[in-house]
Image (cartoon, rainbow, N blue to C red; front, side, top):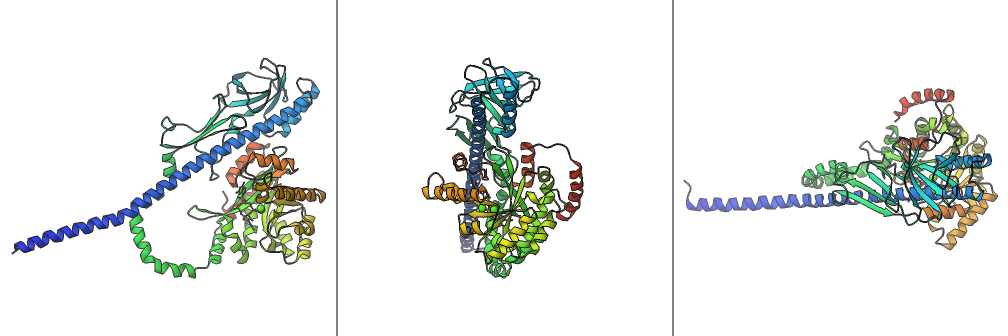
Length: 552
Ligand code: C2E
Ligand code: CA
Ligand code: CA
């Protein structure tokens, strides 16, 4: 029988149990809430950064392209091109050829009507959707045009001095970002307007609830130079669905924390016992090292010169590891040779046809200095490219150096032999670490790559500017080409051009792109004719190699 004491005990017991449950819930809940809070913070920051970077990139693209076109039109005007005589048409044809973004150069009358174009094609209907003076460029008008019945908008920049003047037409799409910050195709909404609010172009769709609400990440930017207004928006849902797995994870966080604590003691010794070089070797066998391509641009003509291949470790779960975290280990662990050869073969398979079809295009590989030690490397490199569409004269090897080169005379001899079979050799990161003047003078290379550190300092730091001026002089005297690295903004492009530097790479043009995006970019910039017989032969090679590499 239950007595009164027992009932009281039971009540007290139940009370304690409830407290225990509550304490348990709080203990489990705190990490849950904290994780959720953290996750929202991460999603917010990433989303906001992403739209801000896209907007900045779009703005830089628009400003760079418009400046380039204005320079071309000024040049034509200075040469007296404002009529449709044969000499004027020839000058217009040359200008259209050398100015990448331009589709058409024309002479436009004071009434806004096109009088003739460099193409000499029938003029067709051109509807002027809007026309306004371009701020920041005296005497220019900025027109938005519709060609015939095509929905695509075109931009016309026109020197409008009252009389007939030259004008250039380019696609409005060139003002919009094509690639996301991760290097995939751009999927958010982007819009560019003129100073007066006329729509230049837009990409993606803007749902009603997007604008001005907290359900979207929004970045707005106004161009100081030309008054363009860029807006990029990305719905918060699409940002958080990207983190869907993380969201699910939050359900398991309390349990995971407990599990991690229990497993901790066992896991640590295991990790230490694991061999990171063996893990790299496994990843190499599994084909996890993939090429990314960063475009190199001619900053005088705006044309694409080629690309530098930068390796990425793409893990099976999709995470992308940058080379800084594994290349030093690959070098010290004796894997850099195989990794570099594998990367070259992958590039032949993935981009060989597109590169081979454009003989002027160069493709650069980072080549650790230790690879220049043995003569056999010359034959190995030749074998990698033989039978592929890429000619050896298109290949650049960038001597990437972390430690001083032990035997300069021997390295010099191997470099000369490589040049003998058509390869071009560059010294990377000139101006930093060991890659100084003595290498430049003693190794007999074809190209020097000026490090980002100097590019950043040009204009603001007198000493750095002097060093770069000296390097440029020396390189010119020794008939070396120069490539400036890490160029991030328009002012740097202008400074570099003023210093006499012709080639550059950097985020202002494009980040390192995955193969698919790079191929799309070169097709868009430089569309080529149908497949040639040579290429048909190459694609036979490609399909055989695809099996080995499981290519894209
Ligand atoms: P690097 O050869 O000097 O490559 C340039 C680095 O600068 C790349 O970093 C590139 O993503 C980054 N970069 C390009 N433009 C900009 C910019 O405008 N701003 C900023 N902040 N950075 C920019 P990444 O891809 O992380 O490569 C780092 C280094 O790893 C390379 O430096 C190179 O030394 C090495 N590396 C990459 N791939 C290979 C490879 O296949 N073999 C060897 N041996 N080394 C490699
Ligand atoms: Ca490099
Ligand atoms: Ca470099």
